[in-house]
Image (cartoon, rainbow, N blue to C red):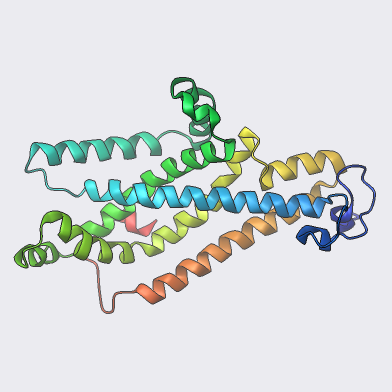
Length: 263
């Protein structure tokens, strides 16, 4: 089996070797034909962009929905919020992510006309963000419910409203507790970003499919893409581990047996 990694230093235009393969990535070589290595790096940046935007959307919405699911059912307003948050979670986590991407790309813009002006990477980021938010919501809910009930009672005794109690006492502790499962979810977002190829976002999976067809060097192409996915997920893991160490609550032991925290 002959492996030729020199394929990455060939032009995407005519397949001829590119003189400045590495430097052309950073724009050092002027007027150079783009190489497959250039294309690979650009695809990697698109993967990171989609994953990063999706995760930001998921964290914000997931934290809100997870918090709403822990509200007490002592008023009509609270019950409606809990049911709305539960409906959100059940809807987005029970529909396959690829179907959600197609719905956002092909269906919803037909009813919400301004979305037709949105680029495909933004639509797929919204789809992936909403899908992931449902999973994060469950983790946040489990983190809040793992706290001792005395935390809320103490905040109330200090004169805090329910909103203030969540903002200053409950959520800061709960979000620290759920960093381990959030680490896995963040890594999943990097991997799930591969669905963006279905709507022609030029990320790693689409690069691999097209470059393999053009060069017939599937082993080299897919090996490089696999390594970049693995490196990206590992980098996210290290970052989240660092954040966990810096924000860990000394001596805290959760009281919940909710299995959501284990995933």
